[in-house]
Length: 224
Image 1 (cartoon, rainbow, N blue to C red):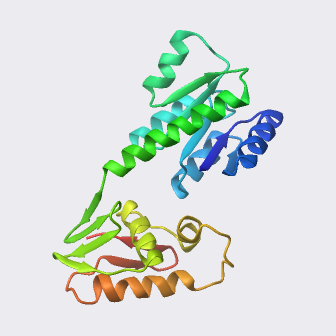
Image 2 (image 1 turned 180 degrees about the vertical axis):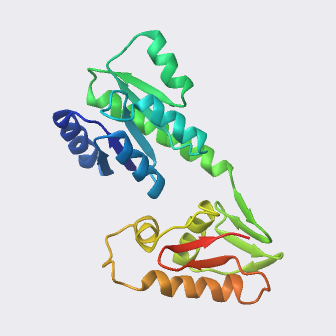
Image 3 (image 1 turned 90 degrees about the vertical axis):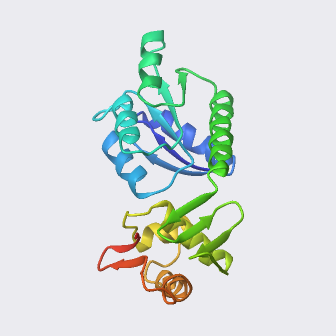
């Protein structure tokens, strides 16, 4: 899993980061709400572990902002306030689960895994992304445009699917490298540009309407 832990207490943050990393998860961290929102906007996470009491934007407000922007990443709240009223407030703000401090790491790990399984199952139900006359089936890994099948390599499909999940939103080369290649490439590499060219030959070149657009100095966007 790709996890984001948002916690301003250094000792607890270190324990959680180490524990989840030892379980073979990819762990990112933020110690304030502003940084957390920027990271969630720029990168894709499977689950966000979010402390309620943060020094700037609290966890409840972060939940509200994410849900208002139609971002439905699974969120587990960590709270020192275990009253029913506080828990209800967090869930109503958009959190998917909560855990009251202090807690055992094993319980947190189990809850995070449950959130991931649930969201993964829900994602699989959403089979098709449609952009104009382009249809992308995430489960079948198939692509059609204007009713015609288009054969892509595994990496070409993953790139197209990532762009499609962010329809209308500009994604940078660094974001693409992080989410599609999933390893730390040399940021000077032109692999993203090369694969965008491959996609354009198959997705755009045979058709009058172009869907993949270059935003100079910013990155790429797919949109009608």
